[in-house]
Amino acid sequence: MVRGGSRVVPDMLDPHDLVEVYETSDLTPGERPVLVHALRGFVDAGSASSLAISTILDELESEPVARFDADQLVDYRDRRPRMTFRTDRFDAVVMPEILVHAVRDAAGTPFLVLSGPEPDLQWERFAAAVRLLVERFDVRMAVGLHGIPWAAPHTRPVGLTPHATDRALIAGRPRWIGEVEVPGHMGALLEQRLGQAGVPAVGFTAHVPHYLAQAEFPPAAVALIEALAETADLELPTGSLHDAARDVLVEVDRQVAGDEDTRSAVTAMEHTYDAVLAGRALEGPGLLSPSLPADEMPDGDELAADLEAYLRGLDASGDERDQPWSPGSPQDSAPADGSADAPAGEAPGTSAGGAPDAPASGSAVDGPEAAADTSDDDGETPRP
Image 1 (cartoon, rainbow, N blue to C red):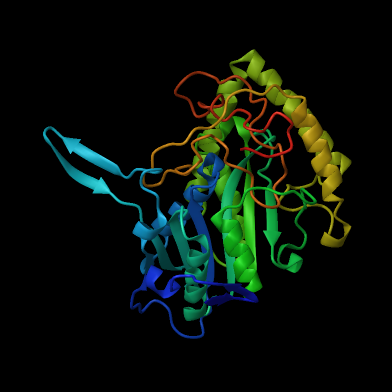
Image 2 (cartoon, one colour):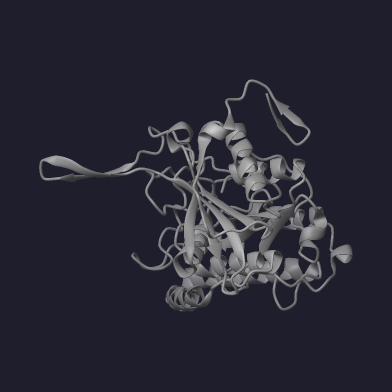
């Protein structure tokens, strides 16, 4: 049997056989890197975590240090690999990879990035294998990233739902919900299992305007990277994302301004959103810098009740559907019944309900109908 913290998992296959570790010269003993994880498959509204991870890996020096056996973890019939058919033959296939990269930030500080599709199978064994890597590389903290549809207008700063194994790790950040039971995802399980093993673990969920959930929304990726950089004391690149964020917001503003119904819907959302935040003393320079210290934060249950009351008044239509797996696809494993759910600690009912009508086709805000409400009729179980 394999022990995970105080937890015993009987009859588990050896997690050592699930991951191959490469020899590397990029990590030296005593450096104690942070592990950043963002596994595609659970809701990643606005491609928030995918954009954040791709920016980090594209703009910083990195090398792979470990590879998981995807054949044992991914259900290919649920998420079929992409194949290329050329005239009279299949000549290419892209198989999914779950990799750990060693990366150095702008100041030369090392950290690790775990990315790829979320495992469909053997979750406990995968978590145990990740813990083996944590021990091998002497990881000092784990940080998870992703995005979720939220009843927030694009004209306001991107908010974050923080969660951690120790509240001190996210002191000064607002709490959005008290207690709610939700379907799990691997990022949340890793956070819990690593915490049980004594490894500090943190997660950040970016609030993406629900009517933009299926488009790339760079402001959410910027918020995630900045939260990661602050929490892990890293110097991370955001310049290209800031430029992309500015361009996207300009285009969204242009299209919203050109449609009276959409403009009215966004204006109404602004008023409601501002009223809820002001009523709980969360206004200020931005949701990332709440005006109250951690020990004076308002009760999360009250704020959640306000948000839920607002969302229940919106019209509900549509849902999200599964998409075939492809590299970089942020929602490649949403369940086929469209029942992907909010992460642990996320406010219920804050999915894409009541999205305004979509502006012109082919625009940066295409897809609101597909990102429309996916909550259950009673509004009790979140279904982003």
